[in-house]
Image (cartoon, rainbow, N blue to C red; front, side, top):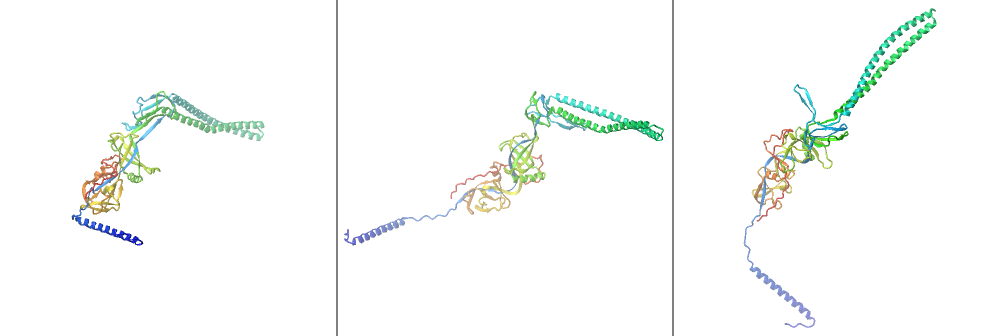
Length: 495
């Protein structure tokens, strides 16, 4: 080892030694890397393999579709009434079958064999003690009889007064002639002044009597009017009394079923006390809230004389179905829900199981018809376009004017029959990508996935599409479920 120079050269010597050691280490590293690199084998040459995506597709087909308007509501009776007491008194009789659930026959008018109308009274439900009301009728009838007798007596008096007036007039004529004769004699000095005075007094006496008769004659119309007014008042009271007597028998106003009974024999009733609730089950209505868009269509159909058909059920899995028609719509919308009520009428006579009031139902109403359209799943749409399977490749097609219906997209011109829309791997697929179809799906399969009806498939030969729907028609086509979005899992793809 070389000796370290003494003095000031010691510092420079150490720096030179460090540089020599670093250069030697760097040279050793470079020689090592070159040696290792010479040992590496060149890679085998292989062909590039394109990635293939395994996808499921939807087969496009143009169809005739009808929208289904969905709504929920509670059935109510078309006619239901709480029959109350119109008079007070003790209940002395009730119908022997006055129990909840029993049917009662109401008043009706029929044509008899002779062509005349025959009125049939309804079943007697409750009878109130009529004794007091009969006595009142008899009392008022007696007052009316007295009024009639008084009018007859007044007519006789009037006839007598007229006779007395005639006689008084004759007497006055006689005494007036006598007075004129005495006055002439007195003027010639033949008759005394006392005779003239006596003749004048007799004439005045008969004139006063005639005036009294005339005054009494003039009062007869007023007296007759007073009696006639009293008679009219008694007649009105008699009508009311007879009505009250008739109201002691409470009868069924129409054919119906007893849904509530609130009266018992011996009970004392006050006017207005409820007795029974009578419900007509032959016809039931269901108010249904619908959107303004659906209301506009249904209102147009009703105005045109068409009554859209409706199918009602307790739930999707229920086997009981009721058919009805939309008969009218409310004139204003609900401020809170922004919906409008339409009313579906159900005739229970044509149902296998009657629809009872109070039943909560879901309704499916025939909506607008779309002819020659394509319906595809909404989840096949990505950024306004779909991918088509075209010769083993994915081809992007932009949709210009799609129409959305729940979980479906309705198209009129962009797609044609036989095309196949890619449904899976949409997050990684791109235009021109290689694809391999694993499974096909149809519109029928898509609709079967849905839980709430949204579309009804129609045949091209369906002649009912342009015909007005009468209330007697029922829903004859099978409805399919409305589709909820289904998340399709992307399959793992290998190159």
